Amino acid sequence: MKTEYKGKDIDVYEEYAKTKQEIADLEEKRKELELLVMTRLEQDGLKDEVSVYGHFYSLSRKSWEYSEEVKAKAKELSDLKKVEELKGIATIKKISSYIMLDTKDKK
Image 1: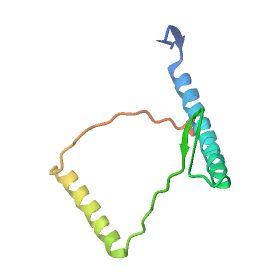
Image 2: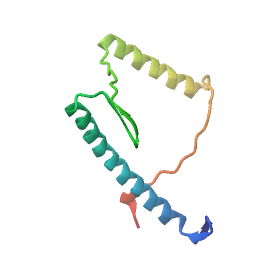
Image 3: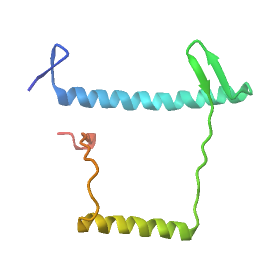
C-alpha cells in the first residue's frame, strides 16, 4: 500500500528502512572523518581551526569509575525505583513513542 509523502506515492516501510540505513552509513562516515579531523588538529598542534566550513575544535570529557560502595548504592537506588514503579508510587512523567526496525527479521 502506497502513502502520499511530499507529493509522491511511496511505500513508507521501504523508505523508512532505506533512510535509516543511509543515516547509519552517514554516521559511520562522520565518525571516521571525526578521527581524521582530530588527527589533523593534533598533527598541526591545534585545539581548534576556523575554516570556511565552520569552527572545528577538540574537546575532552572525563569518564569516572566509582568505588564498589557507590556502585552498590546506585544499584540500591535503581532497585528502589523499580519497586516504586511496581507499587504505583512513582508516576509516569512522559510516554514517548518511537519506531524500532530490526533488519534481521526481513520476510
